[in-house]
Image (tube, rainbow, N blue to C red):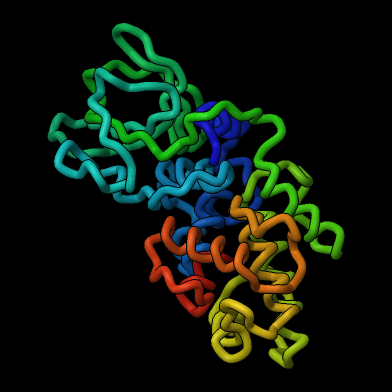
Length: 297
């Protein structure tokens, strides 16, 4: 699990991104969410992206948190909207996500990350500000509704090295010819690693006759192929697909035991599946069926 420092480092690296300099439709954050939800709307031009920027950063860091569009509207009565702890605006810390009210109606209009806290204001990193860019801003408490604190790790970590379990998963993908993006084996589960992971599971499904196009998109055909060929559970005899599940678990930061990616769904892999299911509010049955597959890949 990442720390708040890890998340702020990723957010800071995005400062300067402009939707107007992006050669593709929409924004990189919107295209990510469109792919994640199979909803093309979010990848189109003109869609506000402050909440999608926050979600993209947390996802890249491997922080488990609900998606943030509703965070734009969260207020003091919606303390669990983000699956995280409500924070009064006068108790903010770096890494908190804050909601802003521009028109005085106590309804949220915008979100961003707290980077530093001062006596009368906070400095932030925000997406979709200053006419469509990611930028640092100074925000006074009068414009802040409240904050939420994602479930960060309390233990120190080196944000430059990332999560070692995620690195194991990325290394396995790269060793088998699947790209994890230009950042390489960095220990962060982001869009490029996810695309490589989906290509890997599509390739594995094709060994059973699925006939999928290996495009890195977890669309309806891939999901249907998993329903037909792919349920993975304790001691199942589907070696190729267990490899994909184990790789995915590592990419999400879950250990599959000392044997690593070995194609055997034993006690350690079964435990990792159940831990993943618990963290993502799925049925904790150790069975990688359609619902768990959709979250895992």
